[in-house]
Length: 330
Ligand code: SF4
Ligand code: MG
Image 1: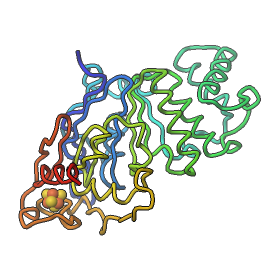
Image 2 (image 1 turned 180 degrees about the horizontal axis):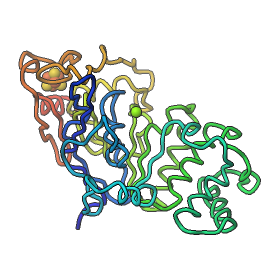
Image 3 (image 1 turned 180 degrees about the vertical axis):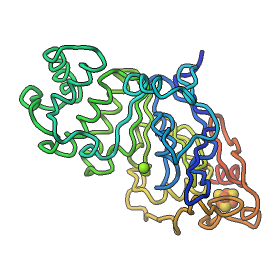
Image 4 (image 1 turned 90 degrees about the vertical axis):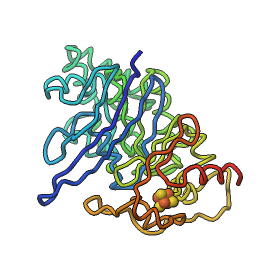
């Protein structure tokens, strides 16, 4: 049987000042019902662009999909006419953005915006749609929903607004939910509540959840599998536990060393030195080599392939097996 979502060899390019710049280079992963895949990367790693391609909101130039496939229960989504894509958005795949305030319409009440989902997509009358809006607000645990239906987005706290966004995204019970940095604008305690809510929605609705994040700490405990992206390509992918315990790519090791972790309280945090490369001017060889503490001469000339190190675990490093082995020993 076809997996819920299968992304295979996805590539996306941008045209910048007459030059084609590859933003996503051969990204592959699968997602099952009720499963969470985290796509992790720094800004400019291609993680958001890859999510937008899956959501089908990249169709406008200058970004274009130059290769690969995105199949939802076996059906190819790339190349579907926009009219068909629109039927998928919200109904089958929906997306939660980082900034709820700009994603929600400031002019309309929250009750109207939630209700509209059911009026437009389910052909409900206004009164029935409002009842559904209340149900949704309860589902995402907004206190006293009936009293808050008439409030506008700016009257809610950041965390409550993000709950409203989540309510909009799950309204039509999509198969796949994509959350792009859903907690970045929030403080730490609210972040944890929102991650919990996303996990609950995933479990209640049996959706596949894709979490786009730059923060390994945020997805710990929620993600089943993690795909680490660097400069548009997959640096490493692994089951979450395995990735935390036995990273096989020096970049992932660096990320782990720069994230506060409960199991290493008091350990010094070591940021990765340098900045990610400009996608329009990638270094030759391994794109991580200018920043890599493990780099050798070969790294500046030969691009490392994704190398399997364990079941479901691979890393794009010439020394993946050694890095993985060292993590196991240490
Ligand atoms: Fe570092 Fe070389 Fe591995 Fe790239 S291939 S991550 S530069 S050791
Ligand atoms: Mg982004």
